[in-house]
Length: 464
Image 1: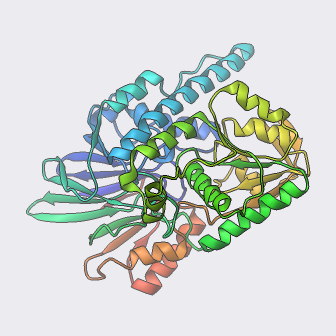
Image 2: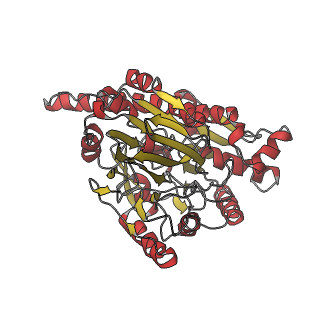
């Protein structure tokens, strides 16, 4: 039995780990790699082994960097089952369809350029038909129910507290007369994240694959983040500006809306319209409403009081493009939430292009920004940025919030790791983190618990 690391190794995107056991091959996640266009295109098209030889995919959650290449592997011949929680399956249905439309649109854009240059056409990474085909392979598994997915191999999902339906995975492999327990954290959420429950302990394992996104970093407390947000909105409104907020459509947008709802209820939010300008976010919010069984006590109490946690006065959900364009002509202060969270695609690019050169405005960055993304350049204080092919002076204020992250911080990851038996857990692999972040977490994992901890590179294989 061995495991190889093919994605989210010393980086935070493209989650993909391969377990070889009992003559079977299992993918833990099958995510899209996001980065420089040429590198991303190459890595997302080239799987580490023949897709037809993969027996199953076990999916931790619906975010595209974890699920987004399932249609791609289906296009190349994968016919096995994809195992996920019910809420993850429902989110993937809209997210993979949305991603497929983006792949087709990007290919059309590149082909227009290639025709002008006399270069050959490119093919979309995958199409909406491939996304539909991928959804037919999903098999849902509820939390806490051990399920055999292949002979001698079973999985158990525990709530990871990251987004709706997110799971940590405990894999049990019976081989050559003994059973090996392998754990995969997926993305671990922080305690007290709005909407979803706090992360659950998966149970003891011998080998652990742990995320490390915020290794070495600490988040501010929940009450501080609400006041931080309120203060930044109020300051922007006082100078007559708009708040432009890039946000991932699934998870982050719903958390922000619920936080704004609470501020509004407490009469702490300035009187301004709030626009959620993302069809995917609107659809995802509808799915959130269908899965109250995943909610924490705070939001459940709101529902019992017949409050809509995803709606309040002056909140507007926008689907069509024409209504989105009208926001550019709005002269009064407002808050616009739009995807994508790293400012690499979607309607947020148009809102940034129209507002970033006005010093009255604020760009509120509320999540992790990967290297080489527009969001990262804004966080780093760039005075000029390129948006949709044009260069803009950055005069708007930029503020950053790590506290709204759906990832546990350094202490949260150590707290989770500390729940495992020191006698049982023999090896920890740190994934889903830049090398600096993983290195910081590794040092404290070893110092605090004495775990044998490694930071694998892409392509590395380890016998278990």
